[in-house]
Length: 259
Image 1 (cartoon, rainbow, N blue to C red):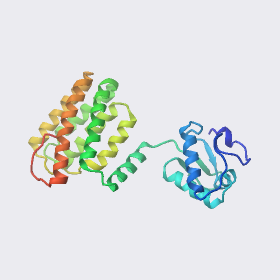
Image 2 (spheres, one colour; image 1 turned 180 degrees about the vertical axis):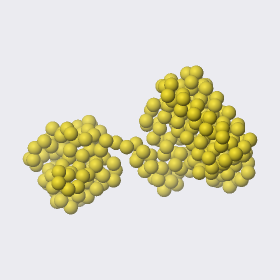
Image 3 (cartoon, one colour; image 1 turned 135 degrees about the vertical axis):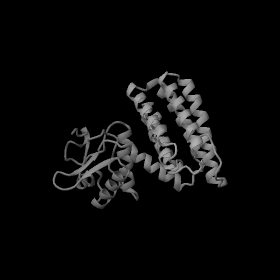
């Protein structure tokens, strides 16, 4: 694995050229910030070896307790991977966007973000993703969408299974955009907004939903970005209406043309 130029030696020196030793009341947080800044500045890359707890303590002129706390924070944030034992130490992680999605979903829920806010964001993401899917999707993406639609045909009378199928279709459309930033945001929002069981779903509504999904998939396959965006917009607006009704007005039994 590549070692960053600034940490190839055992001399007490910073991880990157703009990192300096320091003392202060928040030493651990400052180490974390400097490593993060070096990462964003492309001075550190996935796989780069930062060193052991002792290495970091010497490099930054802090105690091993402070270095240990910084490494734990970096690990919790998904920035580094730590190997213990002989030859162990911290390396810059390869990156896992799903970790970000899960963490963001938790924070959105804890912050009390409203259903309306979630659905506004989801609408923006899904509409743009559908448009990009029409531009960037591959034959494999088209086959996957068709497969999901065929599978959903057999689940029209199974509320739980069809709800899950709708979730998978919307995510597959986003993944067909080949924009990972959009995908990870949608995953995060779906954690908060998508029910495990749609309480207002009936076979008749499920059929209408499936018809809309088929039309979206067809527009994507025809490379009609404007059409895919427009239909997805109408579709997600209906999803938003049901989510808001369920969570804020506690309405039951009303049928909406959405997933």
